[in-house]
Image (cartoon, rainbow, N blue to C red):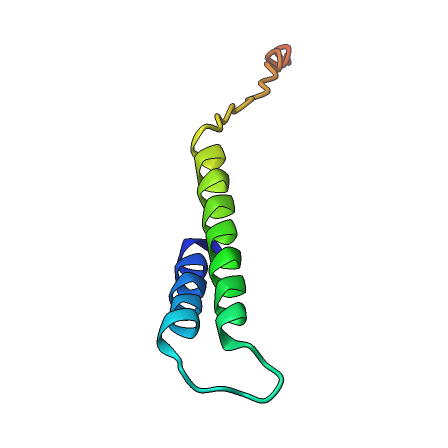
Length: 75
């Protein structure tokens, strides 16, 4: 999902929790909004931790070299 997905969930959750005043039978939209905001914050934290780990990695290149002796002269 990444950083953008986390921000999207936070925004959708805030809209559901604070701006929507309609009611659906058997569904608490404010609670769904809080759940979406919590999932968005969790997604954002995980994405930031994964990005921080990715920038701390090092790469090592191993080159194997074999020297072949020259062929003996032919007469």
